[in-house]
Image 1 (tube, one colour):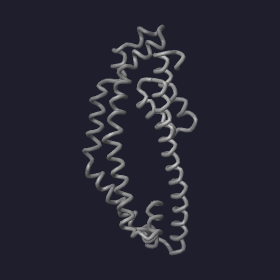
Image 2 (tube, rainbow, N blue to C red):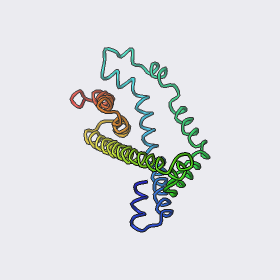
Image 3 (cartoon, rainbow, N blue to C red):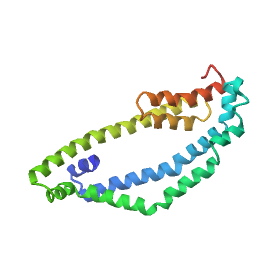
Image 4 (tube, one colour):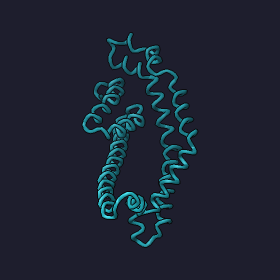
Length: 207
């Protein structure tokens, strides 16, 4: 919505601005799903499959505990479960199309909320409620954009750092680090654990 508002202030019709922003978002999501997510999933499956070996190498005293059989108990049919998840997402195609349509409508109709509220309350009350919601939108929107930027930066820098160090599963570990960055303080600590395990399985100095 802030991008649509800025484009509208520069003289671009609101309908065109909303369409361009929405389509750019859809194209970006398709790019992520088609080119970025598949290698992350593939590498994550490989990481989870080899996790017992990694743990046994890092902690030789527990070599008999961390076996392939124990991994199957905790991660049964990983590829099959991921395939079911992807199938479930694409089976809700109607929901996705509806979501895109309503998003476009709300971006197009700038004063939709105010018109709706004026039907159930006085004009002054509706104006105050809309002003409050707009302040919440600005704060929440800024927080969300900041979190997304932080997650991307952390994920990218983690991938570059692990790749330069020659650490295996750098892509999936970077994805975990970026994703967990949304959790303050604890997220970065939790994300460092799998990276430490993978690095230590190769060299304790790297870990």
